[in-house]
Amino acid sequence: MISVAFLKCWAKRALTLPSFLQMVLARRRLVRRGASVGENSLIAKADVEGKLQMLSVGDSTFIGRAKMAVHARLTIGANVCINDGVQILTASHDVSDPSWQEVMKPVVIEDYVWIATGAIVLPGVTIGRGAVIGAGAVVSKDVPAYAVAIGNPLVIREEQRNQSLVYTPVRFLAFHEAWLGKATPTYASGS
Image (cartoon, rainbow, N blue to C red; front, side, top):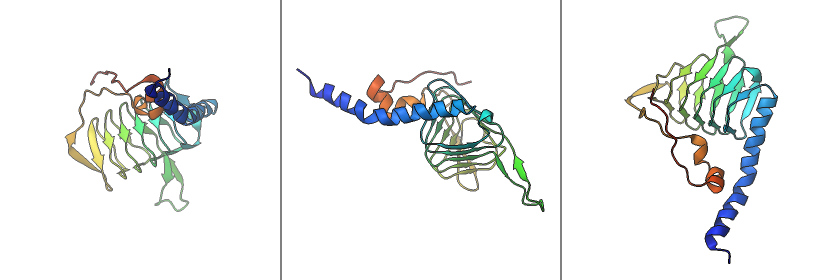
């Protein structure tokens, strides 16, 4: 006899399979177009344009429905969570130049960074390991490791994030739980 728990489990798997397959295909498309994307990293319906050979994403990173303009090197570390609505820009224009020349600068997002919904990351910044960027923040300057940064203009709060991070963001996605079980922490050093 089939149990209710068994039916619920397979219903959840059936419901989450299309979004999982979309993420796998999006990752493959980026790799085919020249990006370097680490193992177990998942990319939702992200809008990624530009020179994809300049995009590098570490292992077990989740990128939601973000927009990324890759005109200079864009390095995203491992175990990073980039929520929906985030914009990452590697180029802008020099407003003091009469010919409005494009200025391209690399962006570095280190391991375990969390960039919340609607944040904007501007060209030339580095976001340190384990930092949190608040929803709607505009990152126009470097953010130190484990810092919590919010607002526009960007303010670095006095509180810091715990330096012993024990998660992998892709494990919290519904399909991961449906197919592989409840999220269990993975341990990483705080250095």
